[in-house]
Image (cartoon, rainbow, N blue to C red; front, side, top):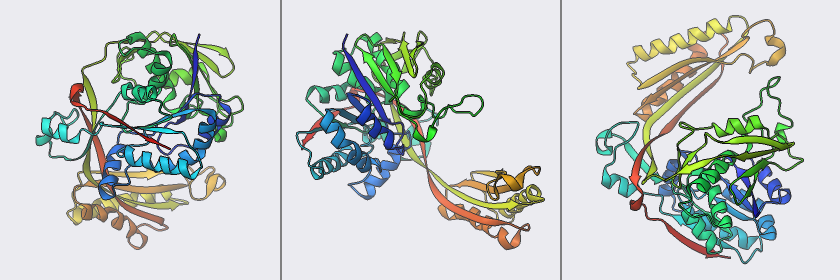
Length: 445
């Protein structure tokens, strides 16, 4: 029975690069997938692209491509990624330039565009899910609107000989499913196969999470060698079953428990996991250990996909002003609480009214280590005030007030920090899929 080996080289935009190199070098893989888009990431990318037409893609794209392109080109490993974020074309141009500089040739780079549906969503004046109202009545400063694309354009690119596929907003499991649909000639209405492939993609999409990252809890769930955590590989057969594993010498572990934990990640309804390709049903999934760090997965199913696509809608939600101050030694907690009370009263005195505000005491041992904090719990605290404002200048008030505690607050405050950051928030809506026009184009090196 035909098999294909798919490795996940990144589980988020800022993920480590070494495990991807290890997968390419030692994983005997056919595909290397980089999943690098969170909900807010693409909205931030749209902001960057507006300021500079050559920006708006993943900041580590160049480093990743320089690291893995020579190996992948030599071993004929295909690369699929959503690192294009808000600007897949610029990302592809840069990848093309990197490949040329590395002396590589005979590479075909596919560019997937069309997920940017800002104009359509604004024109349709769709209802936002969380706001519960039409965009025109929401009062929100909309930055971006990107539809979750499915596997279809990626499959088209592979059918046309693409070696590297660079996309923006594509559903995470679809990046992996595309490789399976192409390799096994699965049809786009074979719902059970698409459900199986989606389950495998979902298991892989967070990279190190299924190999023990985010799982470790010393004494309860020990994971070996986390500093050298390996990323996962799925060996998939054409019937849609798979074995999840990793490079043998890599750190971490693949167990039934790590697989179960990842399966439940971001799942609201296990019998109806909606993607652009299929409504997957995970309720029949079974895991079986077939060897150390080798877990067989089977039993997923699928139902007909929906006629709408989810759209992530990014908007500016004001500014967060933040200030911190540390207190250590005897009475640290009391002094920290007094510091927070002072700032709270200052907000009232100065008639500052945030949209939201938090007063926290953080930490017990970050200043002087474990030795001095023994038998004094907590030995140190960090007072933190954070508040959201519509106005950026008002947000700056918070950090400034916390900083004034140096000479106007309790004894022994130190390590002041202040910042003001714009808040990019997300909502979502549904768009008829026939209104999303996808374009696949190519560059050649």
